[in-house]
Image (cartoon, rainbow, N blue to C red; front, side):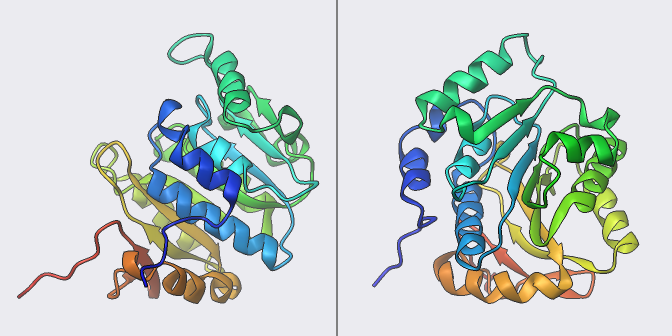
Length: 252
């Protein structure tokens, strides 16, 4: 029997089926499904903490992750909310309401994270551990490096950092910043590559502590067998999981 491709969270899956494409943004439904699944797994394992997104825009991916919150948890959305116009924040809040994310479950943070210290970022995210941080902010090496430093400092020991637009043709060397981060923090590793749907629904990296890999790795391969690229990925010495919409191996 074919396994259904879903997160297993009814509210999140309902949003992905009817609502996700109506919210402007470029994160794929494929990646949102998988990230929702790992958030559900965290909840089932008792991993507690808030969520944060850097680069929320009008809320497409943020709303999906917000639907994965457990009771008592909160989501924080960071953005300057001024591009392409000054009404982005209004549209974000309206999209969240329209798509069923209650106003008391999230807080917009109209800040440029590049100007925040770790302590300021902590204060703006409740000062507790963050179990999931999605980074989709300014796509420059300096900005990504700073956002990674913020996320790293506040990450739950068993949490995940999710990086958007990895291996994107428009930002071909952004991964160099990730390589530098992983080299500077050998306790961290690339656990999973979530492949792109197309050029406007790019790949994501899931990064966690090496001692947390076992919490996610086998579960992802077993939960998404039809999307599992069985050769995996060579990730700086770690053999990472690769999930792709249409896995295949070249016939050579």
